[in-house]
Length: 325
Figure 1 (cartoon, helix red, strand yellow):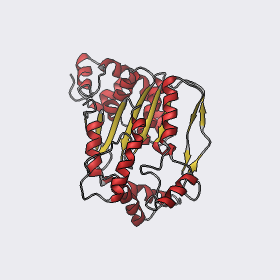
Figure 2 (cartoon, rainbow, N blue to C red):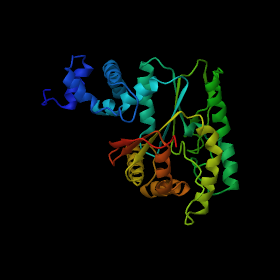
Figure 3 (tube, one colour):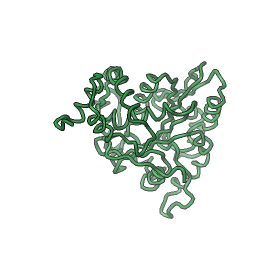
Figure 4 (cartoon, helix red, strand yellow):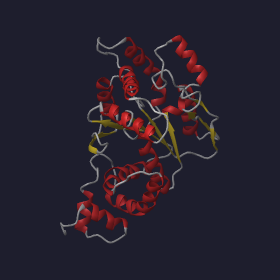
């Protein structure tokens, strides 16, 4: 092995279909998460070379930054694993605000479609109850001043959709939500109609897969306890998930920094955004609904793949959870 080659240089050669020595290939495969995903290194090499150039074009068009190392160590191995599964296959992605769930799903969708799969991306946000329904909810419980917490989604609508996909019943009526309607309160749009079989569902949301916890600490607020109780209603939906990926910050307080940054960028671009004090109140509202110190460890145990992120949203480690237990 010519050890002066960096991982990045080897990946560039692989992307350009320049033959690598057996030693170089072995070196590359040391960086694959084969201990976490049942994947073949040779298949990852072939798929990386096939998808690298078009994926970089996709990233450039959508103003995303995708390093070769990120693709090699995470995105492509995950795509190769999902491509090996029997269809339809449901993958859940759970993570706090700002962890990159939407970006991950868009990149993975691009990769999977290059593997000849028909992919549906759905967010927990798409399942919000209508504006009118949430207005009634808020009148009954003034604590529900923001959408997003347990009880503000139409779980039955999602179960009906997922069951139709599982049973191959088409056409599908996929719910979609527009957050800009009603001065930012948002409302449901006309459903997206899909008249072909879906092979893979990528379903993301901030508490996707979260379970009711029977023994909450006594110090938890009544609001926390009520949100915890409402998680029971979501269990029929989680049952459809074949695989769960958790994107977890090494410190949950990073999510406040990320949201502050996002709002600041919106304001700098001349768009409407929240003040730092409003962002803090907003984020802390969700922290109270499902306290991260309680729910993140529980999610990590249940997830099939746990990805830990630092304050720059870079992967620092990956592990498996204990979802089969």
